[in-house]
Length: 288
Image 1 (cartoon, one colour):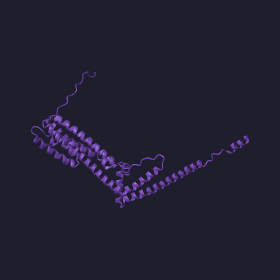
Image 2: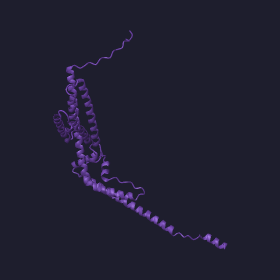
Image 3: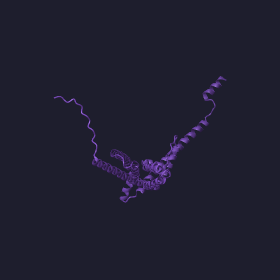
Image 4: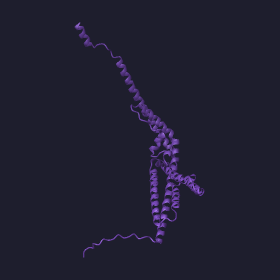
């Protein structure tokens, strides 16, 4: 018997009944809450790591920075003896860049995102923007929103700021939003928070794998073994200074040698006689 040539009609999507819709809404709301909680944990881990690393680098540069500045000064003097000297990077920035970490003023991408999100909502819900009929009531509502925003911003909590934003969106949409649209909205929120979470996690992992973090871990391990990390670094840097001083001495000696050769060459040119050579003089006498 041949295959049926009748085209199969696409099945219509079955609409969810009330109980199924309620369960779906509850599931997506729970998923959104879990995503926000994961974002909270990730942001807190990144912030603690940044604070710990900043404190370590401050202490590191406080004790070792002077020695690195000596090395930079010696290197700059060595470069001055070269025909095409190169610029020496400022010591502090060079130390940070060698560790693959930017100074505090240029890091904290998370802080900038928190500030941007806070400013957007603070501008929209500033009490002074309330005008027209019912302005007093609207102003009071906005003042409450701003207080909540300020509290979340003071704690640098990105997750709470997003919670506030979602709550404000829900208030604007009202309770009469169809269930299907509500489910779609929750799905988009989950995807958004998951993307932010992945971005924060990438930054944290990159920071954990940086040379600066490895140096901090090494300091911690040495401290557990009863060794002084800073003293060992200073000892190594002093050896570097000794090598740089020897390199500077060689550069100076080479410069003096080349300068002496140049002076002798100039003197030789200055004392060269300008009288005719002997054969030419003899020929002249014979002609006479």
